[in-house]
Amino acid sequence: MATGRSMQERYFGARTTSNLKLNPNRIGSADVLIAAGIVAKRSERKSVALAVWGVLVSDHMTGAQEVAEMMGRWLRKRSFARDGKTMQELAAKDVAMAVLKWWRHPACLTCGGHGHPLIPNSPVIDESRECPACLGSGHIPLNRLVRTEYVDDAYWLSGEIDTLCQMVFGEMARELRKDLELL
Image (cartoon, rainbow, N blue to C red; front, side, top):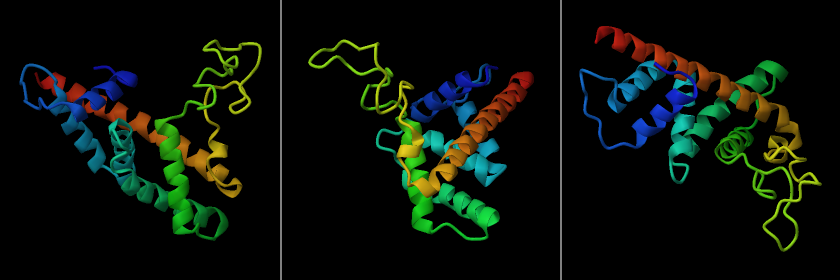
């Protein structure tokens, strides 16, 4: 059973398919969703990681508000543990929503993700200069999407989600591997 990117693609496909028939001879979309449910039941954090991917595959960020509220609670707990002060609820939700939007569309809008600007009045990329907005990375800098005092929190949240997603998709692959052993 493939892990990493392949499992993410299988999950994307399973979330959007209309064919959820169970086939005892092979692992299908229904099996992938069952594995996701098993993993999500293990902890709220893993459930949120899968919900983040659900937002990413939706056409209009369906469910983003609920996911941002859950991630906002993480930020509030983290701020209290770190500073003894709790981040305001609205600020935490705003940071979480900015991270979700960044995850969904990380490419720099100025250069289209190329890292270099276009030559004026031309579709040709000017490779002699770096894009001034992303400094040549091709990605929107996350620190530009949140207020200065919340930049560390935004990067922490992004890393936390990335780590959790890797863990969740790995666990899903192991669950599906168990199913394969039963076949």
